[in-house]
Image (cartoon, rainbow, N blue to C red; front, side, top):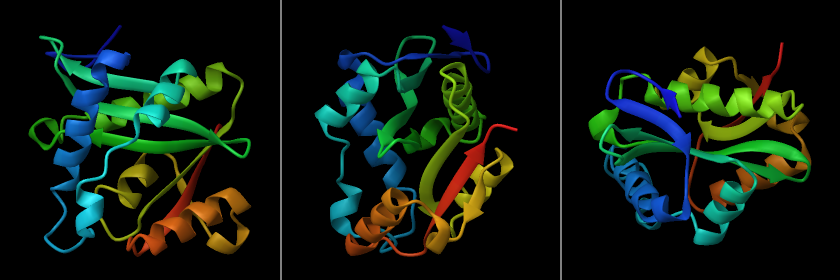
Length: 174
């Protein structure tokens, strides 16, 4: 178990954590301005199967309080041979303490430990805690026309769900 700022720990998630992770996801979605996200997206939850597959592939980690309560998590998925940072959320009550950065950095270290050298994600270009946050962690925006097919497909699916101003980003091991 990795220690973070006092009072928090980082660890691999278990099946017992899935319900709290869904709660964190929904709470984090509520920090967007009213009307920014379509109503159906506000109530989205990562399906059990996605969480379980990520857990089985050692791609699901969380940050918890000292009492064991999860307050943030990160999900890595393999999509068409690419490593995708599919989801990261920190409960708003625990934001701005470096927990999100710690989760992303932990995921990147895990990818490197497996011999990987790049990670992809899609995110909002116009939200301060999205693209600018990832840029600070070493991700670069990639022109959609040059992104892999799987990433372009994800962007199209997101737009079809009403999510606009999305961009692809990539991190490469230096």
